[in-house]
Image 1: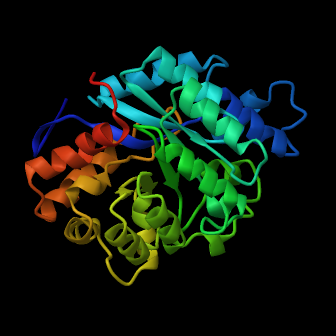
Image 2: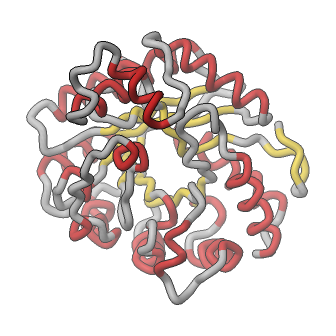
Image 3: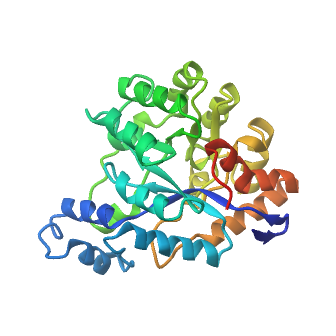
Length: 315
């Protein structure tokens, strides 16, 4: 439990990245200057100045749990942030099942999508399939792979589908000199509307308040009660908007349209030694205060909603 201006709060982070040894190795393999290095992951550390994880994902899980303890955070949903890295975050979940819930990036355009999703949900106890339409260049509304994964998630309790819309950047790719050939034509939250309406039993998470498509995310969530929004990151997307331009206004409008029971706190934490992003949490506490949120609403947003959505075990 974490002491805040709203009182003691059970903080469960809905959005953090599990940057595993496999994650860094696969990125380094794409970089001409690094791919032939004897220890590619060590070279990534030299280039970025970040701490590189041990090859054993359970060791990184231990680092994460120690970091959560340091900040009085009860648990976190950690995302395997490259397709095919389900085993890494599954090992973290197995090591700390009450502290870590697992999510995995899935490319629904690949032939093995259903096999991977089935194994992740049913065998590896991962909770959330994460789709990145701009990154993998597909239309959520038109992809048969998306429909199959969405249907699968909806038939399993405590499972959800995360779909990233709006602006998308991957900072580590830029640090390694890798191009990001994303296609933002596939980044409109309204593309999810027909799928969310059809698969009403599937729970969807749209991160970053729509990441620059706040109005569209509000429309989607208003029309589809199975859509929730996460609040993660610094929300720099507000630079693109004429309104709203401050986080308190964002929260006030989201509370009015979506309601407090469909907002999930997220920090978008990722690499070490930076670790868990306490300033993001502090800014959101302050913004919720300014927006007039009650203690009950804050407790739901900062942890209760995610526990209920994913049926997470108590610590």
